[in-house]
Length: 413
Ligand code: CTP
Image (cartoon, rainbow, N blue to C red; front, top):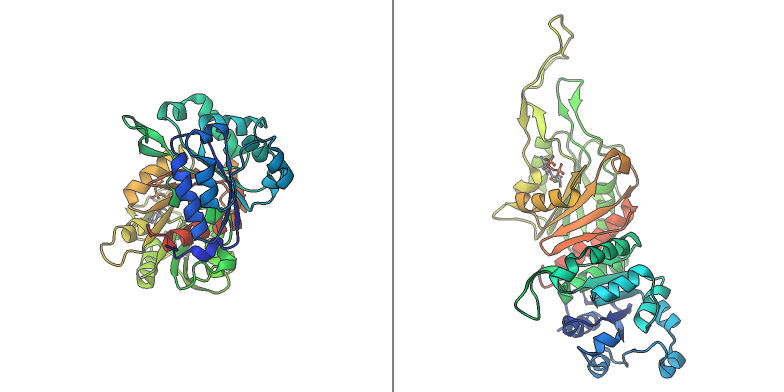
């Protein structure tokens, strides 16, 4: 049955490399799901992949023969491995076995799959699937880190029972629909396809200022660039966007309703008034504490020394919205600004705040994220962690909006 986001990948060409693992059977479903959404799917089966699914079944689902050999005179004559590498808009490797990952990480080209992966200049999405011990092995982890460093996207693996039974752990291939969602975002089609048309999206951005007295305040280094870029990308994608912004220097994005808030308490009030929304993204760096009773007059220096202030904890806006029992947005996304153990802290925040996703980034001064134009983020969901390559804040915004659109349109909502 066609899915609501069918139009999003209409006409896109996907090359699917099927490696040799028990999860290869899920690749058949993946082909079906991608084609349902209008993509053209071409497949390469590795030699080991043959052992799990046949070229005949793959070919029947793709609507054209599966490619198998590097030196197959027919396929070399028809297409050639360089064209196979260049033609698609996106290459997906699913399942990606430990061996295939090692080959990609090290630039091998001794079979059709690895040669095409070496020759391609298109985005590559890798869905690992293997035994948990193989996944946990340092060599595999090293290779996966290399893939990410080389700009490939890795989705999963998930944790759970292995298909072969009897063993549980991290190693299950991401589900076909998760791979489809990631593919949609990588295809970067959100803006042209107006993938958020008809959706209302609420975004917080920038710092908050918590007054000490009429002239002084507690603040942080957030510039609002990332939150504002998300608002702009969501508006470009056709959403009705409400941006609740703390005090920032960046201009208001076009086509967005901007509500200004100074303190965390103002921001919570503005957010609550702006609901309902289909998706809410909390990119603001909200001050955790405020001065319990700000001075009504400017505090003067006295002989008795520096003043001290009693602090009060601010409301957690993200957690308040994520934990609403009625009128909760379908998708609630938080950010995690961390200076160490980024992913571990983000996973804890995901649980603690009750949101659906956390976009985690390292805001140590050395990374120049706060106030800078680039960002390196990890998308932490209940399904796992995806590390995105270092890119401009605008590109992070577009990729995130693509994911949000896919999630809102998808059967899992
Ligand atoms: N957040 C919020 N309201 C707060 C504090 C944080 O809405 N009072 C949101 C931020 O917008 C972000 C997420 O919660 O989406 C995490 O913010 P972060 O500052 O990283 O975490 P904290 O909850 O403040 O935890 P800590 O400072 O201990 O890391």
